[in-house]
Image (cartoon, rainbow, N blue to C red; front, side, top):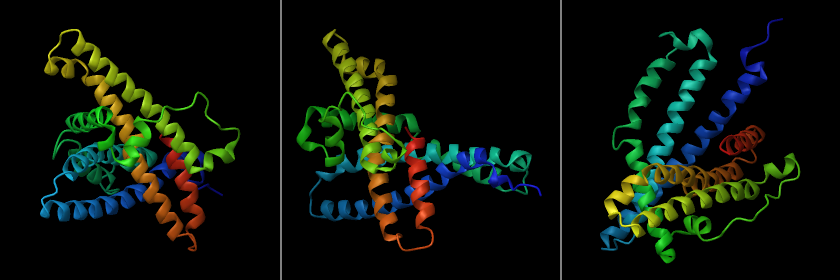
Length: 248
């Protein structure tokens, strides 16, 4: 008896988070399409207030989703061993096509900086922040993460609490550093440039673990509830947990 490649736990640990991520990204894609339609209707009524939020969300999601997709494809290719590099496998062709997505329509670092600019505006003006962003930026995390066993990690709110805590700290660090540079006499341009690394870092964390991730998880959970009576429900719930924990 020769075990199948997928029978190895190490292979499952590589692949399952990406399977879960694919479902989450599909859910979020539908969410953004609906969001775009609603935004378009408001713009037709000359209500431009939604533009900043739409740009802030979409620019961060573009960077997050493309990086997540490319890294996932590459890991799947490696998981296939030498066959993954064969033209007959087809994964290399998929990877080459998707790799360009990290630069077209905006190089991802620039996209994260666009998102960071929006996030810092939300810090200065809390009333303008959407509920998901506001929940992160204006609710300091507790000192302790209330996790006592594995079952606690299966609770969506428990994992989101960890997302929010890390995102809150990263945004606070970037905002403080930027303000200190400006107070020290740097121009807005120079301060922003010098803060670039911290700004990208905070945007990545917030996009991954809160702002965008809240969209991913909320819509993912809704889809899981809709699929609750199908034969795939148990698998989807398991991969949902793997996806969340893989991002911590």
